[in-house]
Length: 96
Ligand SMILES: [Zn+2]
Image (cartoon, rainbow, N blue to C red; front, side, top):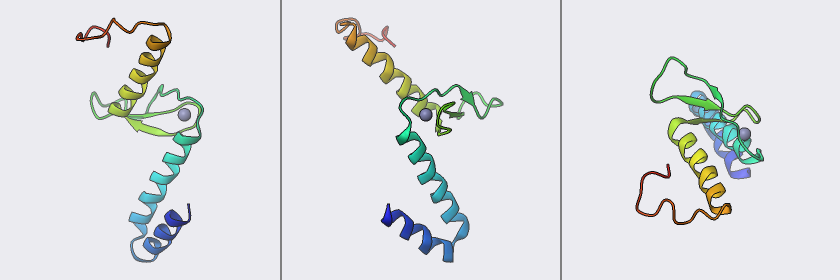
């Protein structure tokens, strides 16, 4: 994106560390957006119990625990929808 590139160029002159961080975020978002489906099986922070980072084995994109949970829950719900399991989770926490 031209706007993103201009933002990075401006920052590169004044705040190189901030520019690199933003560049990494844009690059990560691009990887995640271009991937046909993710496999977040690589735990980048095995020493942690919470606040972990995960990497997709296919595209190399990275996400945190919460994003991984929602991604996997979305896949499960889509499968349930396709299987016609509409009644199962209404008013219940059991479907998670
Ligand atoms: Zn991926």
